[in-house]
Image 1 (cartoon, rainbow over the protein chains, first blue to last red):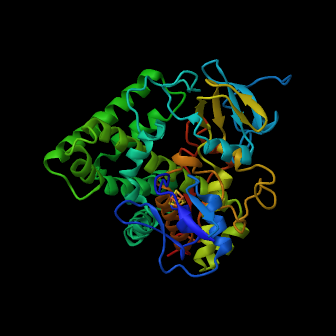
Image 2: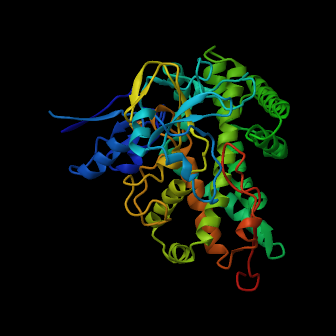
Image 3: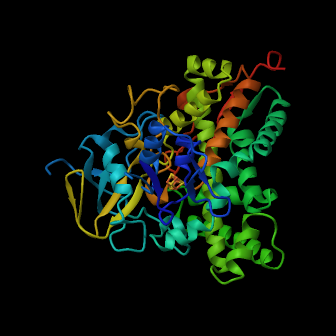
Length: 64
Length: 400
Ligand code: SF4
């Protein structure tokens, strides 16, 4: 599973950062969400919560 | 449908609960709004979340069929009433100011504002109006600082914003208040063009006005939205939330005695859900025929999503949704809306509420409301719900 964030649709509400602070962060210059390079393995529940709470439906889990 | 078509908005019967009639005709029903037009009222939680992410529902109030309140002639327009891509373009200019991290970095400054306000309040006689002395100045000071608006003018813009948000105020007064506030902000933006400060207005002037992406007038409209949204809503949540917690002394005691920051965070989410101060619905118009919760909504139909009903919907939250429960997992509430228009300032609101409640209850353990519920003036006639004043007392000896 990998996480994909649609940077064009993200509205920067930061729900993903609240749901899974180890996994998501927002860029300083634009405030758009990204997956932290140091994101730990696991955290599936938190990530699912982030997907559910993202108001812009910008986060997708894709099979790799 | 054979049910009678109800009038919307409906009045609350209990000051803390959304009107029960909203849901009597099911999760999606027809209502008659203030202008005499009919619209769809969406009260089911799932139906609301689906509707709010559906791009076939437009936020553009200029479109035919938009379920307007009896409103002023709209002369100003900000991204809250735009659709993508225009909405996204403008919102993007602001996001970096409201990220979770950037807002968290404001914690010490906000804590200081809270401490100073409480120092002043507690200096007095042992009684105060919590709204004018604490709940309103706190978010006003914070948003003024962020935008670059002089707080010294707070009487003026608080009055303008309050009149604009009062449904029962005469139209001419509301239009005058809107124009006065916009004129004021426009002059701030124009003076920033020559001399930009290190604040949001200065940033927008340098990065948007000077290169020609936005006009000074568009920036003033944007700032009017941020200024109003940034102080009215949070102020109402601080006062109403305090009142709600004081009415639940066991939960309040638990909050006061715990130093678990997660418990306060959970209480803030639960209060946002339980109180849902945006109580006149999020309004949209269908641009295509769509189905919402089994109802056939035609292009041009107005749609009203009542977040207050959605946040009390059975099955959407664990336990009894009509009970306040600070341990409930309520984070998926729709008090900030959902979809692309979800509140931009939500991280700031959360932080201010967290600091306000925790400091207030820690520093004033004997805080009590000095009025019965029916003596309290609830803002039922405003777009944002709250209390006009909240007389409180405390024991000056015990709280020294
Ligand atoms: S929750 Fe969604 S919209 Fe908000 S910052 Fe995260 S990805 Fe972007």
